[in-house]
Amino acid sequence: MSELSTTITMSGGAEIPRYGYGTFRIDDDGAQAAVETALATGYRLVDTAVGYQNEVGVGRAIAASGLGRGEIFLTSKTWDHGYDEVRRNLRESLERLGTDYLDLYLLHWPRPDVDLYVESWQALLDARSEGLIRSAGVSNFLIDHLARCESETGAAPEINQVELHAYFSQPELRAYHDEHGVITESWGPLGLRAGALFDEPAVKAVAEAHGRTPAQVVLRWNLQRGNVVIPKSVTPERIRENWEVLDFALTEDDLKAIDALDTGVRQGGDPLKLN
Image (cartoon, rainbow, N blue to C red; front, side, top):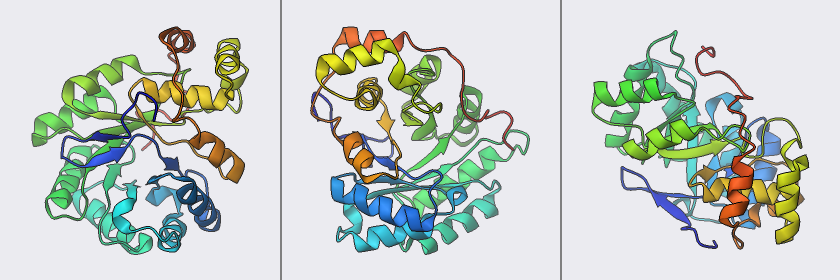
């Protein structure tokens, strides 16, 4: 990977690959085929969730890959909150995935109106202590949610997986993460409005200068801004194209040109409203 480490060490000591494969909105059968392609291409981080309803397919792909379990960094997430509900979801995810541990388990959304995210976070910390998960984190949490988890349990999440792309780059949240030892993981790194980023003059100019596609440029921007990145595609050619971002680097001027596209407007779900 040009000028970038291939992994980041999390606060709990585990190393997470900088670049991985996401499986949102892929069913079990599609997930098996897509994850098999991703693993054959070279991806070693695979991200799924209870809510994606594809853990069985992901598990089958891992089993069929010929790779050892320790060669794959496997992430899943729980939608349910409450100590016992989180523990039950984790057990069921392990069974569906065909593994006895996860490399990373996340609370999928903060669900503040339910107001059980601190209790749920404690369930993840206990699962980590027991070896059921190697790392514990959250997804779509805002600064207030992160701060409360840390203040009430004494432990900050190791990672926060959030919507992050050139239209919504979340500089304030990323700065908080850096101050508190939380890794930023980007979902939706290509933007959530199909192809819009690829048509931006700044992106097209950088792509032409480097002989790369616009998709490769915006993924590389995300990596060079310090994030773990998990693009998703079900098309084998796109899965392979997305992988080819590790052998070139954007200049500082390139990065600033893409930074300027930030609108500060979220395109996906609102963490304060999804309950």
